[in-house]
Image (cartoon, rainbow, N blue to C red; front, side, top):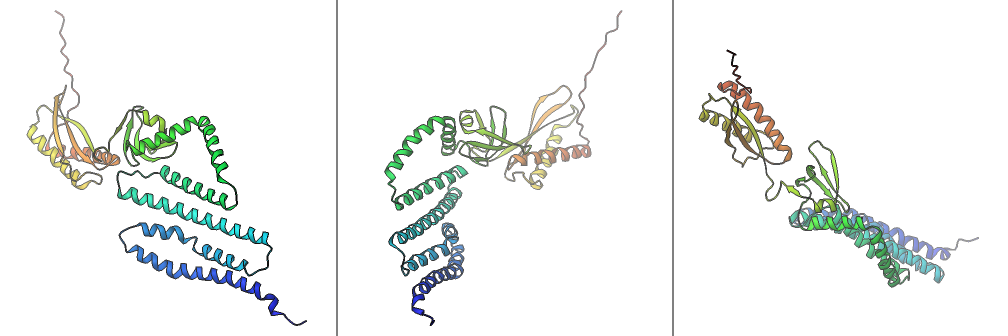
Length: 344
């Protein structure tokens, strides 16, 4: 039986459309897209990098879907099957566009947060952006499938009312978290102390909880509603600076001018050499009272963050103790003089 090339003409052309489109997509991604990324890296705005990264994983898929769409028109499918295939292609295209837009939106939010201190950046805003974009994408898919979105929106409204009543505490935490972020009460990276005596660095503010890491490297999880109503001290507002205050005392026989000079020399040395010390903060010494066995004073040295103050305190005590020994300055033990009256 002779081979009939004509009977294979349309399937071969359809397969050629699919393979050719996928190959063009691969060429586009490998050469044109990569060239655009190199150009974007040289620009000052990071948004073009975000856009290119967001669409990178979908480039070949989009070209392949275009090839499939052209290919099905070359094949003798029934009208119903043709419509089903085209609907599936459209759904895949909308889903890929939705995912790319969600990645793009999250990346652009991060850029805005980096360039604008008034805009907070947490997983809450990233998740809200994803949910909104995915919701719009699903509504477009419903419309593509011929499902009227009006009943869907109505059902969402009625269901949303029932859900809001059932999840009252969860929604309270959600809106409390939004209030905390938008009011700039605290932002990730701030060192805070609550009226519950929990103290640490804010790691993240999610839709339900605020995550705080304390100085023992433990994780403290606080509901947003509790945090919003708490009496809170933010050590990073108005400036991100901590002052390590170290108390000490010297003998009553000491020359206080000499003590002051030695203490400030050691404090300046710590400021200059210890990692974590604030180089712009000028150390100071204040004599505060006449103690029972010593003249007490307090030294203030700036640190860049919460962890830095402990390094500053540690190094200052070591160096001051050594320097006092060299200078002959006495740090007295507590002394009590007891007078005993002998009976006559």
